[in-house]
Amino acid sequence: MSTLIDRLQGAMPALVTPFRNGQLDEAALANLVQRQIDHGSRVMIPAGTTGESVTLTPQDYARVLAITVEVAQGRVPVIAGAGGNDTAKTIALAQSAQAAGVDGLLVVTPYYNKPSPAGLLAHYQALGQAVDLPMVLYNVPGRTGIDMSPDTVAAIAKAIPQVVGIKDATGDMGRLALTRGALGGRAFAQISGDDPSVVGFVAHGGVGSISVTANVAPALYAQMMTAALAGDFATARALDDRLAPLHKALFSDASPGPAKYALAQLGLCTPEVRLPLVEISDTAKAQVDAALKELGL
Image 1: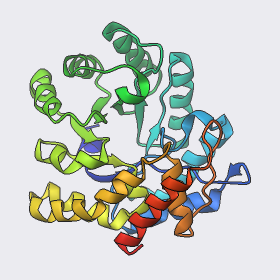
Image 2 (image 1 turned 90 degrees about the vertical axis):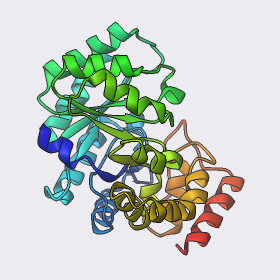
Image 3 (image 1 turned 90 degrees about the horizontal axis):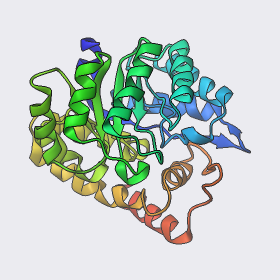
Image 4 (image 1 turned 120 degrees about the vertical axis):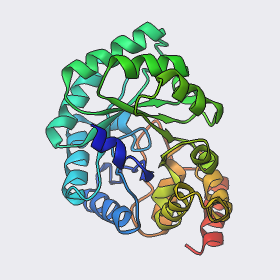
């Protein structure tokens, strides 16, 4: 597991799941994964929330993971989204992911239920007992309605050896130091889940970003992350300045709708999303188009 921690660095796209006529577009997915690897992304994150995981059938889920693993061919780790608000269903997803041959799991906090810190610990402990895979926690309170404090993160990590890191989408830079302090020196990867603040996150000790923006502009995003991790923050900031309009545009409507629309404009997949998501607004399309034009994409 320490080996995986060492590989959790740089640009890690939270892959969209491409659809065509309501079905999984397997050829488009394979092409998207290869494109990410070709452009410098370091870890693949299929079937996460950006991948519309809650609308994937069990068959879709297994195929998304199988295709990603097959295309990656061990060149980069594959960390599968495997979260939910029902522990038993989360375990079933994790077991399916393990069978697909992924390298680890990205596990969002149970949404809506609002479990206590003790409930969160029990949830992740049950998952750790059911599968033998490293786990990355995922804290996104704006979506789930529950926030894992640095103390809770540390308690979970100390109790469950498989927990190797966290995707933090709060945008709160102060959490990195507090989490390090609470962990007391335990090896732990702190990964940004908030594209607009990622350069600052790395400056505060983060190791990478699980990104929506990287779906659309993987080469620029990978260059930005490489510069930031090398301590070249002047270059990283300059690249981030270029990417900032795209960061904003990709959340101008319900995600991942804008990202899929952008990829459709690039000829890489259809803009289809599954209900309850719908086609993005004309205003959002205009913002995405402007951001793509500004980047020369």
